[in-house]
Amino acid sequence: MTDLASLTVLQAHKMLSQGEISSSELTKAVLARISKRQSVGAFITVDHAGALVQAAKADQFLSDNPAKNTPLLMGIPLSIKDVISTKGLKTTAGSKILENYIPPFDATIVAKIRQQGGVILGKNNCDEFAMGSTTENSAFFVTKNPHNLKKIPGGSSGGSAASVADGQSLLSIGTDTGGSVRQPAALCGVVGLKPTYGRVSRYGLIAMSSSLDQAGPFTKDVSDSEAVFELLIGKDPYDATTCSFKDAPEAKNKLRIAIPKGIVDKLSPVVKENFLKGIKQLSTKHELTEIDLPDPDLALAVYYVLMPSEASSNLSRFDGVRFGNNRSHFGPEVKRRIILGTFALSGGYYDAYYKKALEAKEYLTQRYLQVFNNFDLIITPTTATSAWDIGAITDPMEMYLSDLFTVTANVTTLPAISVPYGVDGVLPLSLHFTASSGREDLLFKIGKEVENL
Ligand code: GLN
Image (cartoon, rainbow, N blue to C red; front, side, top):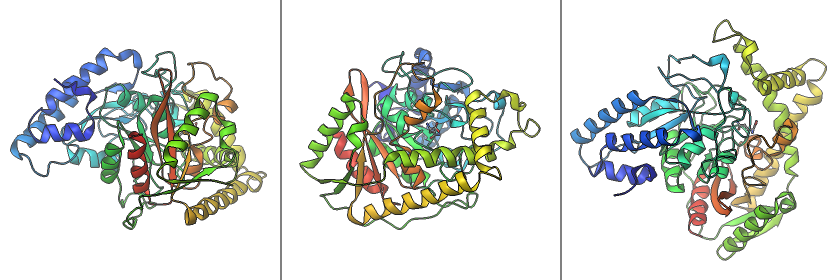
């Protein structure tokens, strides 16, 4: 008998539509796994009863509509990062300020999942307002890395990554503003995708930084990522920044992959060795070339001006009058970013910081788009190290440096994927690919190849 909790979305979909298993059985197996592994701390809210009701409904649908054209997510137990609004289900953003907030509406992506018949198990733990790289900034508790409970799972969507890696969910949807889908996916050994800015609706996401935020899936493999991505994308009348993209041309077999020069000097010895091995393996089929690109430090500097500026503006709605508790309930990292952002936007400094960062963002975007005139993909590792000990990094500046390889995709609006590749003992390592706007197809193609190396 298969361990039901370890199934991928596509495997479970096939078994459900062929009547080999029921959604109730599958949902109970996953709920049992959640209870057994509470020590991981992947969930802020588990909607046990609600999930079983949704599963029973899915089973009814499956028996009324046998075999053909079953929606992909019908009866699939999945979870949602707690910064994404779910109607009737508590949504805290990992913050005491929203400790008891129950949204009166669904985010567009949640509505899409419900239309599909997806079974929402609950809400995954995350750093407060998605600010962090470890989930240590959650106001409630720290999520643990399921491969070693002393290690961080990454962040900010650490609960999402841990739940999928640990069989506590078949799929989770997270948000990625500077790497919060890809980095925890990398550290927990699952696939994490940040789509091109504008492909997936942000309506109903508790905003961190509106020009950088993008929701994306955590899945056990690349085929699941691709299938779920197809369901999430599309224009949304509630989000004016969404747009539709042309169908991508057929990808060539041999891809031109750029390696940013100097990148290996920034990696820990294990990650470096693993990355060089990946390059060597991929070189047997593809053309890999070192190229000059602006140092990733530049994107990091731009990110840590634009992100707090936008966050300070977005968070001003939490004034203790319209939503939730008063502002003293913000945690220290959130306060730090509000202060940073307010400073960067203030009269005397606006030109020196915010305006300059916007110019640098434009420069970087143009530079990266130029690269894609001659290349299909850019390769880096997702992170410079494997997962570190809980509590090991306390200096905020040092924490910000851990976003080195992920923030560029957000600053330049480009799509990027993290795919597991190699290990450091029990801890997963990964490769990270960035493609041109709307070319997620290339990310899925290379991702599937990496899975088979
Ligand atoms: N770690 C980054 C930060 O702290 C990214 C956060 C995110 O993508 N939500 O800002």
